[in-house]
Each structure stands twice: as structure tokens, then as C-alpha cells.
Length: 477
Ligand SMILES: [Zn+2]
Image (cartoon, rainbow, N blue to C red; front, top):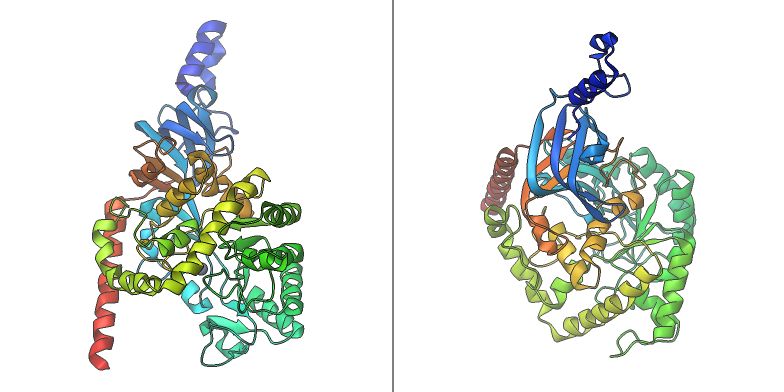
């Protein structure tokens, strides 16, 4: 271990210079550390573990991280020795639908950053103002075509006066796309989300409008289970060519396969057609957020363990009714057949996408699937990604530095000098068993330690408030 004081002492002894006495102040480029975390260290970019690692924190940032011999720090800095535990960058969930009653459950579960994939602007403002919320990137309302499953009561055109309360907005023309994307950009969204039933000309107008504002686009183009073959107009290859940054759920892949002449419901898929899709996605630079756990749970509800998730003991009962409703939907044999088609396509495409260097990001889509725990569900997605063929290292990268690259946030998802000091400490070894990400020992956000007991108590309180509100609503009706 190289503490600054020892380095100075050694150099003074070697040089025998009396001037050493005046060197007690550290150089300006090496500020006093606020905290020093010791443990094994996951180098997210290299995909390796440093046995005797250190993260030196100054303010909200990492000042130095790596082998202990490569960093120096002030002897007075508080040291947190986590022994054999593993230090990882705080995890990133790239696909959530956050709500106030569980927004506090991300951080104590080690998920320090999320990308919200569909919400009203008012709800986002509320979430952002909630103490204990994770770092939040968000898309705001979804944009869909005039026919939309999201607006069954009829089209919901853009309404400037009601923009804060609109969960989805209908785009009826390319001109609409310009108006609405301009308004959302002014509304401080970070992303634009384009949904299943946008016609191609409006879809392209929206990606171009987003590009003018420097806003990345995510697209959900539907799967076999949803409306990917029955209502969608734009397929995955078209969306990639149009410039979207992420394909959610591998949406649009079934439609692309079908348009190439294949049958996505066939028991065997044609490798040549799959290769055409993968080559086009790779060429475009698009990333994929497959939400693998979501489809795994629809194929076989409760196949991904949840009892050992952080917070499961205090949260699961609140979602039991909702989960049994969702898993009841899955019982329909027609639904099961469609889910199996999506599973086949996912299993065929993921290894090919990895081989073609298409970036795979981790997103849970919580709370949209049965038996995925809002907040900690990213741990279930990591498990599902490994079951789908990623190595544990690739799965961890999908939730750290690859996720940060997808977000274009160079200071997240890695523990390196200059990065934001978001750290997850786990006592197990997720490289040998990915479920060890659940063994949360400590969490740091922006250089500060999280009081885990206090954070979970806040989740309890938020759930209690939600229960009371629900009871009051039921009593009124
Ligand atoms: Zn979603």
C-alpha cells in the first residue's frame, strides 16, 4: 500500500535532504482523498479483476483506481477495507418504468443509474425530486402513430398545455414529429422514444428532429408477443438505418425476419436471414437492450429467482397481486406460442450480435414482467443475460461501461480517474456466479456512502404511503 506519507518518508531517507521537511503538503494535482475503498476491483473496460484493488475518492469523483501500488493517498484519508469483497461501478439499468413508491429501491440494490423508458414529464419531475432516487436519464412520453395500443380510448394528439401529464403522444404527420420533439427537448428529456405503430415517414422525421436537438432515440418496435407482426410498420433494420441508438426488447427483429422471407414462428430459423439482420445492425452502430429477463419470465413465469434479491423480503408482498395478474395473462396457449417465437429469435440473435460487436446493454423493463422485483430487477436481468449466453463478465459490462457508452456518459460505468464515484461492493464473486451481484455489502453514490438500512426504511415508508393511498381510493369508489 502506498500512502503519500510513506512515499515522502522513503524519498527523504533516500535523498537525505533537509528540504524534505517542507514537502509535507501534497502537490496540487493530488488532492487529499475523502475516502479510500480497498478490495478486489472489477475493471469494467478490461473485463478483469484486480486482486488488490483501490478506489481513491476525492469529492464526487474517483481520483485514482486500480492496483494499490498504482495509487497514492493521504494517510489521513478514511480507509474502508472491504477485504475480499468486489468493488464494481454502480450498476446501470437501461430500461425501467419508475414510480415514486419504488424509486428508492434502486440505489440500495446497487443500481445507481437508470434510464426511464416511458413516463409523463410531471412524474419524472417528481421522481427526480425524491431523496434517494438514482441518477435518472429519461425519455418522457412515448411517441406512437395514430393507431396505438397506448391510447385505446382514441388518439392523444400533442397538447402543449397538458404536456406534463401525457404518457404517450400521437404523431399523425412528419410535421407533428418536429413540433413534438421540439417541445420534449424544451421539456428537458434526455432521450426520445419511438413506439411500435409509427409509419416510416413519421418515424424518420422524428429521428431527424431528435438528431437536430442532439437527443438519442430508443425504439420499441414490437415483438411477436406484442404487435411486432400485426401492427408495426418499421422493422429493426429500418430503425437502425434511420439512426436510432437502441433497439429495446430486440423489437422489430421479428418483422425484419418476416420481411426477408422467413417465418419467425417456425421451429427452426434460417441462419442466412439472421445474418442479414445482424450485419445491418452492426453496420449502423445501433445498440440492443434485449430485456432478456422480461421475455424469460413471460415464457416461464417465476423462472428467475427473486427471494435473494436485495429488499425482496420487504417488497415482494406488495407486488404479488400484480405479478399473479401478469402470469395469468401468460397462461393463454396463444400467448405462449408467441412468447416461444420471441425466445427462439432472441436465443438465435444474441450470440450473433455479440460476435458482430453489437453493443448489448442491460435493461430490466421493470415492472412489466411477472416476478421481477421493482428496483433490484436488474440483478434478474444479469442472471437472464448469462442464461442467454453472455459470460458473467459480458453481463457485468452490459450494466456498467457498455451501458454508460450507450448513454454517452463517459464518467459512469467505470472506476477510473475522473469517473463519478458510484461504487457497488458485493461480498460474493459474480464472475463465477452472476447471482452474487445480489450480495450487496455497500453502495457509494457520487463519493458518499449510502446508509443501506435508512434507504430500505425509506422504501418501506413509500410503500406504506402507496398502500394507504390505494386503500383510500378503494374506499371512495
Ligand atoms: Zn418498457
